[in-house]
Amino acid sequence: MKILITFQDNQVPVYFNTDTKQPVQRTLKLLTSALENKIRTGKQALKKCLNSLISIEIEGSEAILHSKSEFDSLALSLY
Image (cartoon, rainbow, N blue to C red; front, side, top):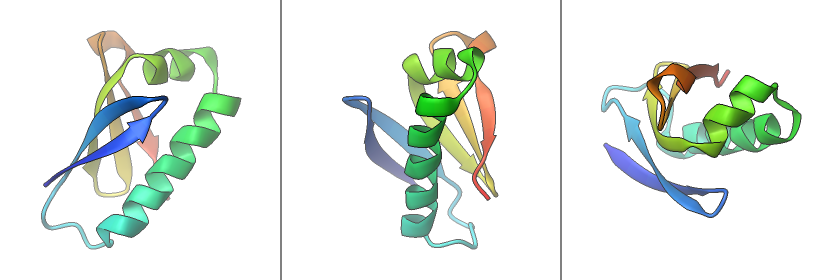
């Protein structure tokens, strides 16, 4: 399943497995909260990834953040 979220004035696609146990709305709320928190307080490498974010993939309790450079892609724990 694919959902678009707005992050830093950009539309970012978020991809989910259809067999996730958590409700989608709860996961999206956790994701947006974590992203906003990390853009304010995160380390430089994380901020670099967030500034060039192109998509997010939710796998279990982690969000895989894909950026324009494959070397800047990171995993972020949601729980």
